[in-house]
Amino acid sequence: MRRQLLLTAVLSSSLLAGCASWFEGNTQFKPTPLAAIKPLQGLDVKWTAGQAAPAAGFLPVYVNGLVVSADADGHVRSIDALSGRVSADVDLKRKLSAGVAVAGDMVLVGTQDAKLLAVERASGKVLWQQPLTSLMLEAPQVAGDMVLVRTNDARLTGFSLTDGGKQLWSSGNVLPQLTVRNNGSMQAVGKEAVMVGQAGGRLDIVNPQTGNALWQGAVANPRGATELERMTDVTSRPVFDAGQVCAVAYQGRVACFEARSGNLLWAREISSSRGLAVDGRNVYVTAEDGSVWAFDRGTGRNIWKTDDLKYRDVTGPALLGRFVLVGDGEGYAHLLSNESGSIVGRVKVGSALANQPVSLGSSALMQGKDGRLAMLTLG
Image (tube, one colour):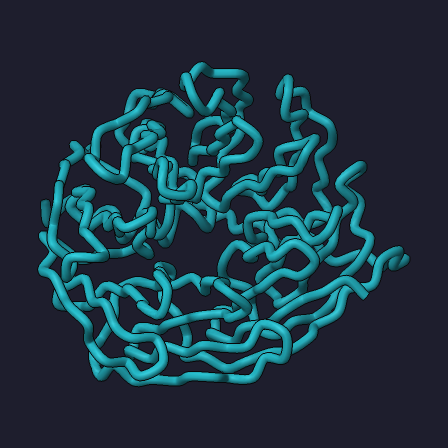
């Protein structure tokens, strides 16, 4: 297990940035220079708010007009989504490994001593805590009266939100010899299901009440002669929309399934650990090299591809109005046409942008590697 964890940590930092052949040495690709654009759509930074630099497993959450965020030092902040004003800022005085999830006035985070911690959002008062079998490295998911946690030993566990965090079920998963570090590939769909991206290219749809799989689908199948070549993991959050579930795998494919039956609708070859987004027409994917693709939702046909941002450490995509929003490693946010992929707007947000933006419809939340949060709107 120690060998596996060490290899996972090394590979997650090196492979995802791109690496050369063992025999060829390092061939780091230079970021594509930004070409001047003629802005066709305004893109504005509405507000920014400071936060300690987050680990990869910390993503801000929007709920009831608030942006709730946490950091590894144990600070939990609530920010008014309209004004950027901080309405609550509590110090839990505990080191955290991942977060956050929000259930009413309760915030759920994972601690560095392998506990699931439930606290009152406004005061930081500990409501309950439960031991975990290993560190939690991604935010928990709330589904109705349940909270689901995945730990570093590949165990998925369901806790009751209404009974002091009582553990109701737990299930394990066998990991391949090598995996890409996963910092967030679970997504709840109401109280009916939780989508769980797995190592080995598998997608599980889980009943949150029992932990039983409603169905399992192969986003991609491991291929190659070596363990390194066979790493095919779903490491970004799947997306559910209008009866369709879509996910993408590193060194694998993007695939869409019929949500009730699990039948595969289509799949296309692409490698991504960065994530995807969908609208009524297309599925948008940021590939590992920073190119951004659009595929027809119904058929998987490639609609467009843009290489304007290749090797710029591009985030996964999110929807901002009818446009596609991505960030890059130099702190720029780019607005892409959903019809052609051309860049129609751009704004400097700050430092290198870390995670896939959080879409709020007519606005979107972005976070830099320095922790700073920014709310973007169309101008």
